[in-house]
Length: 107
Image (cartoon, rainbow, N blue to C red; front, side):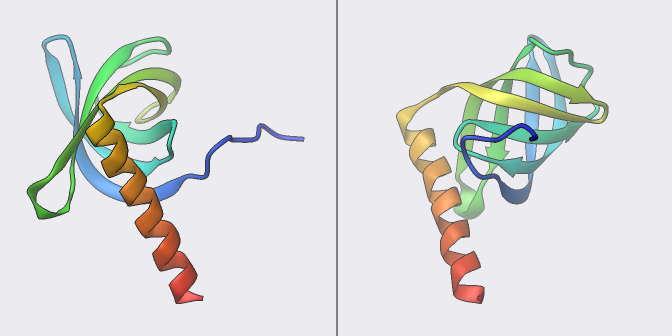
């Protein structure tokens, strides 16, 4: 049997910004879960790298967190969230809750 995720992923398709030290590059957040993200970016990274991620949300809000790169298949990468403020964790929970609500209401 394949690898099982602890948390379900939500497709977000939002624009963000990745930063490693003084290097910074735009990225596209493909999907997100409570514990990690899948991104597309031209920033050169390898497994184990620690990155800062900023995501633009609706109504001028943003979300920031620290990631550790787990998997790289250029230009996509998967990373786990290693550090996030309580406020940003709350925003992330809202994104996931909103998606669950809207996917149930479509059915």
